[in-house]
Length: 63
Length: 146
Image 1 (tube, rainbow over the protein chains, first blue to last red):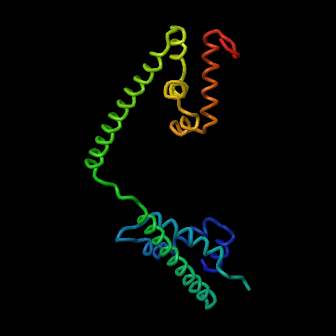
Image 2 (image 1 turned 60 degrees about the horizontal axis):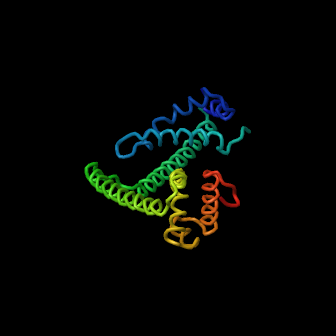
Image 3 (image 1 turned 60 degrees about the vertical axis):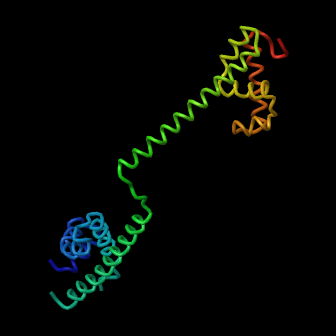
């Protein structure tokens, strides 16, 4: 699916689209959630939450 | 994927990456701050030793206090001839007995009683007069006197 459509759907709080975006960025979040060679699950949760906030707040408008 | 799509994807990825990095940094700083405030927990054995000593000291102190209390109450009761009065005094609460003892036997002022028992002088005075009133009532008298 085109990213723009997916992104716009996610911005409308579409659960499936949000999950797909989270899935896309999962490797990056896992990379940043590793502390002392161990996955910090609390930090991972924080990062997922931050990603959702990013989707909602990213300055983008369909022209 | 056209150019516009690619731009959006790369811009959003960069945006999300910066936000995620900041979140990680904040999280680690917060965790470090919490850990620096935590009190280290010592070995069980050491803690137990301290506890035992503390408990022994407390028990010793309690027995000394109890002994003193019993002696004081005996002192108070020894001054009373009337058996009904003895019985009445025994029915009073510990605080009432203490105030009565300090006022009558040790002739302390209300200010002194208050500071000894951790209350205001007025409270000590009220407790004393309430106690007297209670004794009178229990002995079958009225508030004006026996």
